[in-house]
Length: 438
Picture 1 (spheres, helix red, strand yellow):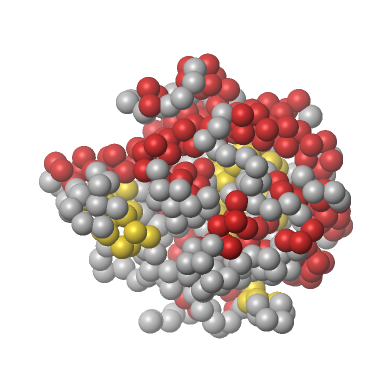
Picture 2: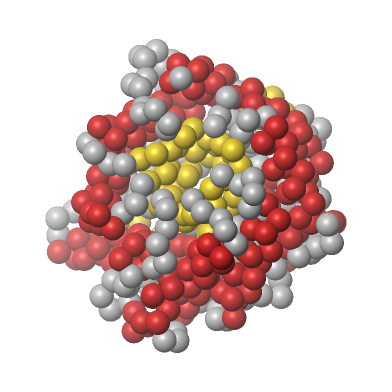
């Protein structure tokens, strides 16, 4: 693999641009013995579900070591820290006390708390196939907002409902491990409804500065053949527009609404509750072609033969240790395309996740990746897209879902035996970049 040092000065972002890093509760907290179980605890207990057979029972042990992590954030010099609250922990006695302590520590360190209210760790008693889960989520949000709302800078209702629907309920490779294919569509609708109800609950609690974190990436047709273009358009609808259109313009893409449960028109009025900003998680574009009649393995996933598309390799591009292509300019394409599609319906944008998996503490590949993507983001700003912030995924190497501990996205190396944290070269690089930006 080619290594290269980044030496060109980074262009200046506008004053007030928000720089941060992201994590999620299940991936870093550990302390599973002092919270209620989640669907991920059940999933990882089943043999063969996680590639290295691991669980997140300890993870980075951030529940006990959060002061170390706050010190790392302060040393890095970020403006904000995006973390999630574990719904099962909030439901446990004293669970909110932990987040109280964390938020206080962040504020004392001059780091703004950005709270994600759902990042995939659903309590085991609940099910996104059931409509009532959306109302239960709104109740959960009210409890969290009442306790933390006086100190939280920004709120994120949901993280990546597309992935939670596709991977957890359609393909069965994430918790809760269902392989429902297109019968998983109610899961998407109920999560979107939960988002709208959560926005209302936050407003009722006096909270503001509310967004959602959806994953998006450009979809490229494998060729100009009509069948490849049609497959790419369907993939783009399923993974992109299905989750952005209802939130931003109050309707589903054509042909989708009639597949959703309940009074869809009434629900869309809730789903489209105005938000203050729109979060985008970006990692890579996807090249898509017509189905090829065989199950496809790509990017750590298995795509069944019955799907009306296949995901193809993007050739002549470097890839991360996860096998994801590195295409910084696709971030510019994504953002300018979003601005063109939604025009005045698109609120200010934050990049709520962007990062890569590489081994090693001297992680020059990660530095090159981040450098390229931040420059691509700046080009989108220059093109007139109203981008207000950028969050790196992730602060720490952590439990990477079905991959276990085999993938390392962190700016900080975690020794999963001793739990020692060691800042990587990318941590120092980002620290120096942030100092230069100010």
